[in-house]
Amino acid sequence: MKFLRLTVAPGLTFHGIDDTGKERLEEDEGGEFAVKLIALARIQSVSEQYVLVNGPAGRLYYWRYREPFEAVQQALQDEGALVMVVQD
Image (tube, rainbow, N blue to C red; front, top):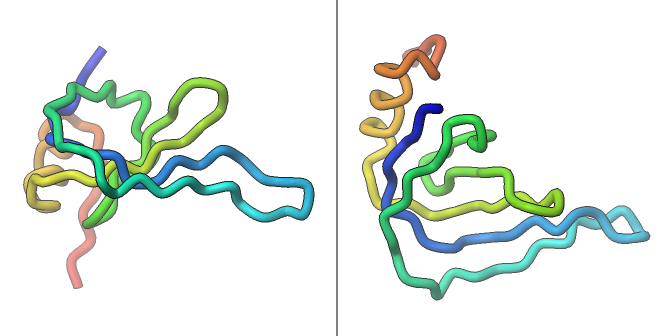
């Protein structure tokens, strides 16, 4: 199993969809940053602000991270987890 080392803090937690079809999101922007080794298989997407990972009970976690986006992109590419980078 391959891992990505990131310095992350809580951002948003997706708890699913309510009875009206609205997303149930919980904000948690005040948490402390911590170094985590995240299994690549858990990562759903990476943006310039968040890494989206699968959690227990069908939850999705949007974690904020400190590293530069380009460094994360390069690490994923080095491990063969990034297929192609399209430049503007």
